[in-house]
Image (cartoon, rainbow, N blue to C red; front, side):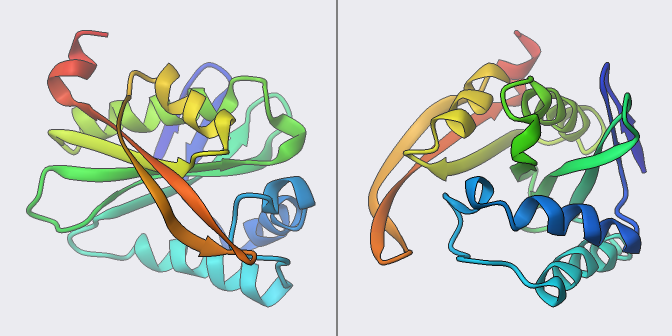
Length: 179
């Protein structure tokens, strides 16, 4: 499976992609809003292997794709859409970008491409995403792709020795078609 946008190719993960994922997932800036303190090579290889296994699902419910920057032919992150149950027309959106590529619109471009896939190809009715409330950049990505803030949960994620608030964003097919 390959999706394409102006600057990016979103493609299936390959086993060798683990090194690029390891490079950005071990960056302290990346780790700020994740439960992990560090990432080992084995953990990242297992992470990528999970996506390789998802490619074999029948029916497939999870589409987590490597984000490749066309100009550099380099994996700079991943973006995906995941149905909770095959029969439900709803899915969650998730993305991550290497910190060297933050602020350049790539997360927004990838998320927009994945949302289009979800509504046009998977015939979804609703797509939602969540982020740590303090992760303003991630919240801004969801706003830029047309998602609306639906809920703020107070102190519902515990990691790194503290409670974190989370935000839920969502967009319906009807809302997306009006963009």
